[in-house]
Image (cartoon, rainbow, N blue to C red):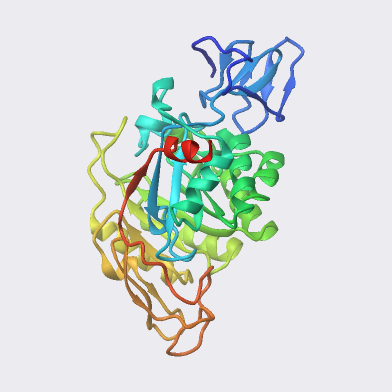
Length: 374
């Protein structure tokens, strides 16, 4: 479904042409970026809000605009096997191409207000800011980077020129051709595997399961992008033993045992305020089920759980990376990323020493970095 909003003009500096679309016989323009295939008349926006039909083409209307920038611990993405302990510059835009009734960032992802996009920065400014702030990577997060495809790729290119890596935090709802272009510029991804039934996706996200599974298989099999998954467990919706077991078995069979799975706690939000928070035991149970089915690295999230948040050797059981929340409390890997006790390799992207950023959260205003470059 598409809707009309404020007037869009090609001379707006935030509006840029895009590639993934085609004209229909009835005069409308179909966006081919994601499996929604929004069919738009000139002046209409897609469900994602940020892509629109203008001058008989699909344009991105938020290039260079953000809902805010913040330096986070990389474990917050969550990524537990990609440069642990390091700071990551995080930002998002507005809108989303799914319609999750349980959205935990609904104020950003469901926004239809341009005022949400309070900050602005060109790709080079973001890369410079990340470098000067000591960030090893930049995260496209808060809402889904799929919908600001062109902006994310340009930022990634600018970051790579400075040796800074790119992380996509995404629902994986994207078509094959843009997916290939997008992941050619990413270094790591955390993909939300929101549930493991078509019924769940259809009723609670407005999307479909198969395109997400295709994205997961593509990332793991066709790219060098480091991959982890996250599932927000919602009481009574996607938290049954059977569903978690089938999901874990699929991950092991299709992606391999080394892909970390994160099970995180739901908190009442958006259109599901009447659903209770996820009990800790549900997360602990999901972690046990995943590991019983061959997942080597399974984690709990959004709860206080030192054991479920830490990384353990799949071979000897030794503690490899101790965590308390987002703080690292122990480092049991050698300089090659292997267990110091038994020598078994730990899957991931590690350096000889962990980062020391801890759990700090540092809001950043990019205007300071634009001024520095003037």
